[in-house]
Image 1 (cartoon, rainbow, N blue to C red):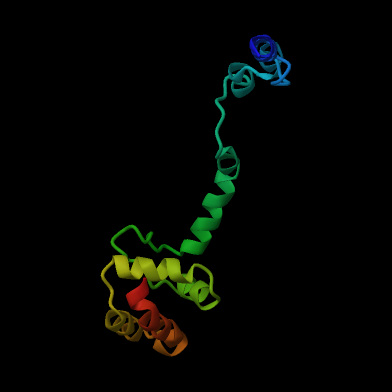
Image 2: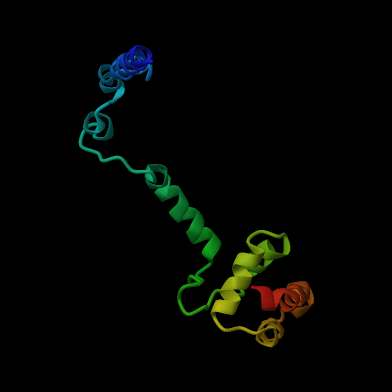
Length: 140
């Protein structure tokens, strides 16, 4: 029995010391690695995930000027929350709940929304937005 135990230990040692069990050697993995310095810095430019926005920046500025019609951004105190273009987008379902979140973030209750729509003369066209906002107000 002592002989079979010694043979078993020797076989296990040989099996563990050989690197055939892994299938990939340490030398092969270094050949697969590539240098990030070479690939990221082409010329003098740095790599950016938003480079496509920079290329179309001039076109986007012109489009925003045409769409804005002199109105300020939403971030400027909420002055643009009820712009005609935004309300039309909301009626078509585009960014509906995102804009509802903006309304709630500015502290507008459903009652405030109805008053603003009435004061702007937009109640008849956009009263469906009010009813939807009122319905989902507690979950927004």
